[in-house]
Image (cartoon, rainbow, N blue to C red; front, side, top):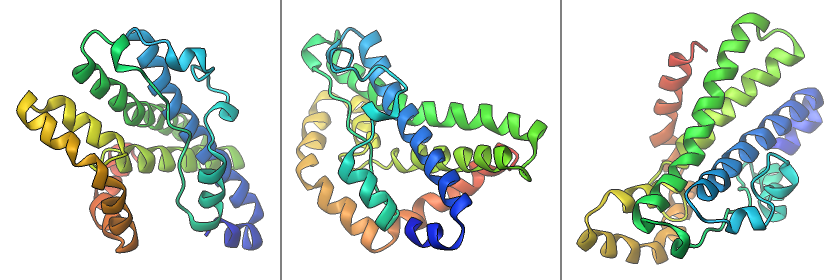
Length: 201
């Protein structure tokens, strides 16, 4: 997908790649920062509490992003033992990623009103807003290993929480089915459009 864009519109390609790098980096940084604030220093000791993209980009995920238009960042590890309330705090850490994407998208959407979308800077800002919204929305899907799965887990009572976590072993297969059948687009595209309208784009 992006390779074709490189061949046809190289400038747009580099703007999109830069926007994706920013979006993924802020997402993973938010996970790491919130985990650190909640008492777990695992991510900090691994050098993940940083906005440096080199700490957050996964080699395989990045290559697939360029070749297939779908990829991922390097997951931020945390140790539940270090958290005061592991069930609740794990959900907060998970929610921090998508929330950071939506907040950044909102800030940049305001800047676009002053810059416009006709320039290179304006185009970069627009792509960054768009992909932050996409990344934030996609990760809220309640399927393991996405953030939405952990968020739901944190909201469930203990009895249902155990059953929910047992479903994690099937998550990757469910996610692959959703991607292959394009069901994810059917679910998140309307939400993305609503958010773009809310942001005035």
